[in-house]
Length: 297
Figure 1 (cartoon, rainbow, N blue to C red):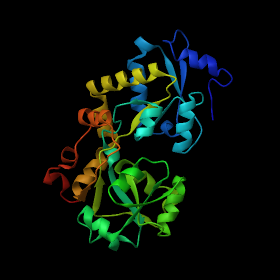
Figure 2: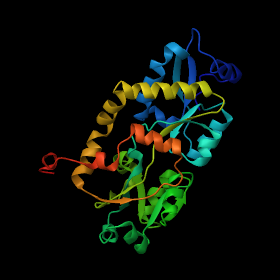
Figure 3: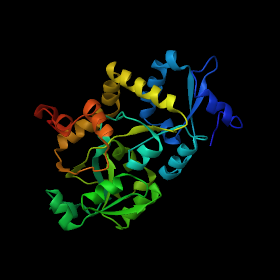
Figure 4: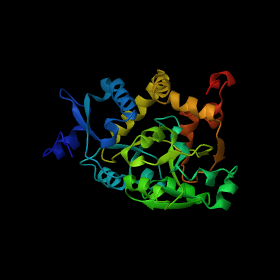
């Protein structure tokens, strides 16, 4: 892990408790945020709050699975912030920043399947059809989605290693590797996705959000990010960011006219639900499209 403050952890901890004076304070984020669209919103939120909280620099840690990231965040020494979906445990043990960075798009799920298995999904028109067919779904062991899917009486197979899930669906250890609409294209371009395709007909949806979690050691950082992201929304920056990074994905979803299967998310806290209501799109808003926009597709 690349640590800008290696050997000075106590000094870094103290610096983040107070507005920085002079030199920028390093903030260590999870490695995957270095190339994520979320980085832009995080940096904007930090910038617009600089006058009140002081200058910072965003640095990035080493590669790790979600469970390891959670543990490091609890320790509050080698990692300061991550982005992932909420769960009751995460909201209890960490400091949540209640803002949906991709405006709820994380809750729209499409299956990655073996290229020869589309026929299994053709009869499915309702969630009850899926349950009767007992189509199985693969997910990461530490992903909150596991509990959501099981609550809806769907069979889930787990593995802690994200890359192995591609091989497992290829070997038909499960039928569907459910991925969010904004993850799908990247995953199918991966070297691990040989022989895999996007299922053509169905779209699973449950209320879900990508949100920032901060170590409990740094309450000012969580407060700062909450204020900065809400300011970004008020400035129209979040909406512009969504159109730039996800507009093509949403247009494709609208034109494909997939069968929407709505699931419940009993894990979602009231604070998370309110964040979605304030800052995210409903399925009706997201999937509505003028017929003319899809001509020729």
